[in-house]
Image (cartoon, rainbow, N blue to C red):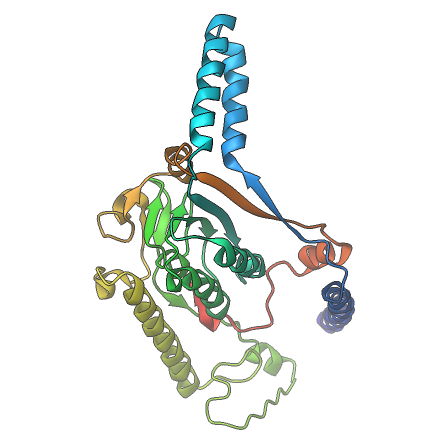
Length: 328
């Protein structure tokens, strides 16, 4: 019975592997086709001033009597005429909803490239950040995109309403967070399963050959030595040090050694630790600048293709890369 179950399990594993390989090949080919001209992605610019004005008008139409509503419309037209004679600085509103691989970094880099080309000295950027962290190299690239704004003296405000990855958040000239938003977690975690004992039980030998003493530290199927584990921990420590140096570059006022423990803080606590500058929501920030600035939200509208849906359904957040470089 055990032999049958083992053989059946191997058959299922092989079938799943073949199916995933076919899916990846098809998805890669289709993605290549997309890159070579089938580009349905469009950057959409939405005026938040108009959005909130329409909200206000709908409510006023229901709540105010005709005389008061008419007087208000007259006052608004007069104010709009006066505002039209004066140029308003712009706030470009970007959204980053990050998964473990920071998949939307491509969208972010396009938006920031566009903003850099048109932003003036009085303009600024608001990034609404939502992320629980993920792979270091992926979020490192996302943080580098934000650093492009800082390098060009374009003020950046980062707003965290729920959960914000601090590798990106710390680059903001100003960081605001909702009272119960979660920030911090300045640490690195690494984890790998090991099936070596299971393979030995079934008399399966796994061989892995490398050139270079530290080409591979821990392995999934081979037998890990204490030296392998020590090298793995060393790599995590190096990554952690780089993470702390990165934060110190943009937030030198922090006691980074005291805060880089992997702990998290709510927004109300984070302001005491100077992880953020102000407690508040992105909505409050937008409303506070509604009359003084043009608020332009940049969005990417794209058609989700069948191979994207398949990839998301069957692969989810599975990555071929080891998780030794994951931020938490």
